Length: 111
Image 1: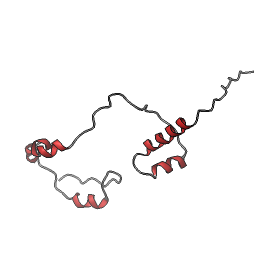
Image 2: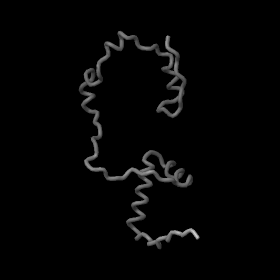
Image 3: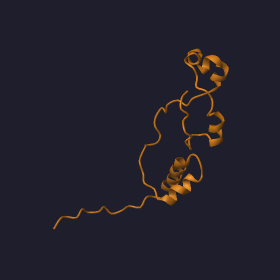
Image 4: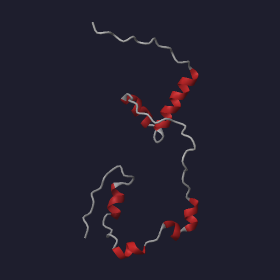
């Protein structure tokens, strides 16, 4: 019999869920060979499941940004979509106020 994997939190199920199904026996090769695709077994239900298609034209640019812990905690505490909420706030700020012009820093020369 196969060794039982250990529970890993944060995978979309609880420890109670894991305990409920962790003693299920592994499928045999014969059982696996008899399996059919979901869409073949339940075609009407499969038709109701839609997938989002690719974007025609990307509307945002992927970037890496460093945020203060307090900013990150604030937006993450609001739940899923926290990255979008940060973007919404930044768009609101830049569309309401003109950006302040900064003087360009002149590079220092070595003496």
